[in-house]
Length: 412
Length: 81
Image (cartoon, rainbow over all chains, first blue to last red; front, side, top):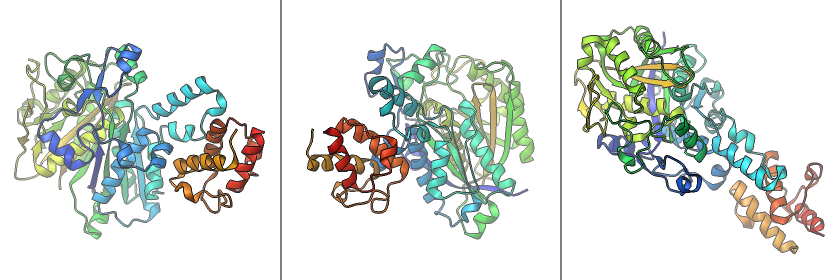
């Protein structure tokens, strides 16, 4: 087995335009959710008028041609990739040993719908030739591959809200299978558009707390009423330990286990007993050669939906048993909203930072925890992970369609 | 209807927006591919935007004959009649 390490991190999201400002905001328990910067709710009669919008628009950091040639989802992936790559020390890698795995849950929805608007208004002759390269869901992976000349392979595994975690899992496998020495992987999503918002609202999946956007994402709270849509990207640079050591790279953490299962139950609802989620976590720990007592921290999928949060919480409790009382549970979507295909990647960044700094980030807005919650939830303020010895952390990501992905990281 | 200077200025704006080049670099004698490094996809984008801006039709089979910026300006001027 090849040891796979994390040597670079990057993000842009509703809390910050880079990792440092994001982590600082997360530890401070700030919310990145605010009322929409536009009049869509009024114009279209939308039931939801808030979301986790980027704090640093991509137009502030990318050139004008870059913003015109890439869908916003690819733009965000590129912003996060540039940070992660520089953070990793811009390693010298044979292009044929460098991979790119970057997913989006929804794809280039802005491009698709804008092109359709143009066609309806002005006719087919006005549809721009870049429409297809921009809307295809592999576009962010392809642009990252182009950006870094990554030729070992470029992939975009899609599994709705588990996509970002699944991309990291595939990045691990590329290294493990000997296809690459370094893989830039993660997820991105730019779906804050009236149609996806209204579509999720039509499923009754979104919080409607329009008068209190910052308090709307409240995983495990008894008053939770749905998730809050967020946007952004998270990117991690994975590398074989050997390659990282040879170039003297700084190592944040190790990626030691993957678990992937499917519920085979319902197109949108999780299986009520969370069996698939439990199997994913157990599989990841088994692959890592760890037992439940090695786990100190879980970054939960916990999106703030009435049903989903407690299915996961019971699965965690069921797997960890009494040890759950020693595990610090964080639900960072309380601050960022739900980045869909970007979520598993951004939350991997949080999990890795938690291990690096031995600090579990808080879950905000939990004023009245669900009485059935039997895991030690980190509320309002960060809490310290064990300061000595090895610590392991699980990052859970689950997607519509019954996709369950668990990643296990350990400290460097 | 626009004169050729106006067409050049308008075309330069489109090219600058698409490529990041300065508008001043977009001159009549410049080749789209050799001097301005514009690939076929960008060229098709520029053509689509120019058709809208100047209210003309530039058939796909005509685009390959537009080697220089001057060729495009002449074609647009002619198409506007």
